[in-house]
Image 1 (tube, one colour):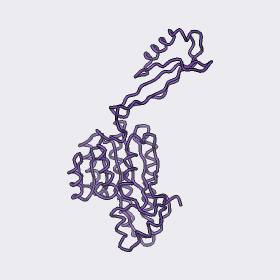
Image 2 (cartoon, helix red, strand yellow; image 1 turned 45 degrees about the vertical axis):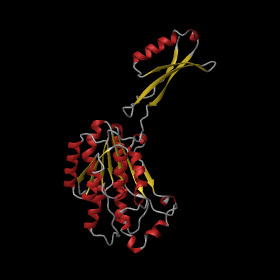
Image 3 (tube, one colour; image 1 turned 45 degrees about the horizontal axis):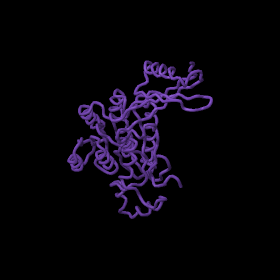
Length: 325
């Protein structure tokens, strides 16, 4: 009997210890078209192929028929949840406030061990009290503080699985009113910190063959933002840095994506409430409201999970429709 073609899908790894791959070889008669039989295996070595072919050849109903073999992969889930982060360690910058804090809490809820970097020690200790969490004081505007924190991270976990770069600041002003000191500071916090966190942790992720990095930008990085020139410039830089790093790292199993929140009710946003502009700002959104930090955290946790296994260099807008009008 002559086999016309033999198709195999690329190697496909189980994504958790509770999952396995089952390879299904199916023999199909071409004329008339009908499935003749299935052959199930848990591996696809050449020896297994030879055994399956030999078995098929011995089937009397195949005598003299032209056939084609092809393979299907059935991913068998033994009850594992793809959004379950058991056994994974996540690092979250800006994890003691706003979106970063919400992301840290959600990752903890999903079973991850979370290393929280931030400046608010009271909130950091409160997160530690939840269990499975460690607070590391860090001022991301200071490269030495970042280096020290990353040294502690790698000593604690030689191969962190997830990095969420959420630390950030905003600054009102135009290019005419901003000082060079202000410009440099916002770039240090919003851009250089992302560069340095990735610089220190990506090598360990590459070596481990696995990593998920979610960088937090903003809709201001995708559209004009009058009066927020420096902030918009930093968030645009984060988006482009993320895309470029994603293209470099994907082949090593390190997937990098960006979340761009719209107006979100964080302490940074509440700081503008005094002038009564929050309600007016919310009216610019088709939903007619601003986001809760937890709504942004949902997108972050998804991108940090294996459910997002085909997302590389994506810029995910979570903005209540702000950029669609």
